[in-house]
Image 1: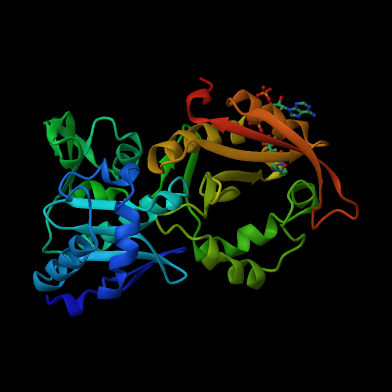
Image 2: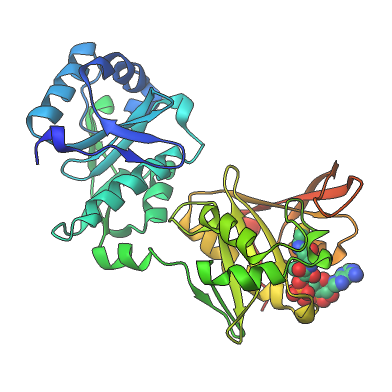
Length: 343
Ligand SMILES: CC(C)(COP(=O)(O)OP(=O)(O)OC[C@H]1O[C@@H](n2cnc3c(N)ncnc32)[C@H](O)[C@@H]1OP(=O)(O)O)[C@@H](O)C(=O)NCCC(=O)NCCS
């Protein structure tokens, strides 16, 4: 492959495109920051504009699988596969899930070619952010070895990780089994059953679900909710082969909203479904918190959230498509370490 053949990759928020000479200043800006460069072993330090130009030249010359991570035309960082998967984001881009989103696209591109084998990477032990990105992608620890830190002019403790093709492939699905339920990504065939569940007992408790949806309306909405490996998807809850509810997983910030067929209420079904889903969300995405809310006149939902470790964060007035007037809404957050799974 020549570098010119490196495809542009698009994610919900980012565009990964080939590097250009005009990226040198933005690269210098990004890795010129000690906060960024301290985590990067191989880069010259201090970093100069010529280093950026040389890097871009080398990527072109060697046709490396390395992309500029951009958002709205601005370069946020770089991701790619040279000897190992590596990435950096300029300081303002941290904490928004961009690292995971960009690395996910690069890794997906790698495994899309059936000839490509396992991917390796690694991080300094102190680099907890990168550890979370790699573990969320499915990388497993294979050992510990010192990694050179140019900034400190010495080797520091490091962790080696690998992502096998089998493990990546297993991650392309999101199906969970509990004693009574199958929880799986929503599909086109669910549209009819989904539409039949949009009764007012359910829609009144949600903000944006229309009452009495037709199958065609549900079908039209479905593509936005399909599982694509990133946050923002809907899980179908299946009981005895039937769709009986869903868990919507939101992005930015991570959140859940859910409903269940009234015929199955008060049998612990939603507690069972969320008990399986929440740990998986923390495992698969580099998130520290998951948010949720419920209308004040929906104590059952509050009971579930508190049981699972969510804590109340506030209260505000909110609208529902199925209510005439705004109503009080109670907001919650669940910290990763506070998750309680009832047994
Ligand atoms: C909320 C909903 C998902 C609950 O599902 P479910 O399977 O019946 O919930 P569970 O049985 O797992 O748990 C409900 C808990 O609420 C409790 N509860 C039920 N009614 C209650 C009430 N009126 N007051 C206080 N607690 C109540 C139950 O006792 C149970 O807690 P427990 O297991 O400690 O006894 C379901 O009622 C629903 O789909 N409602 C409409 C849509 C909706 O409200 N979605 C949530 C939006 S925030």
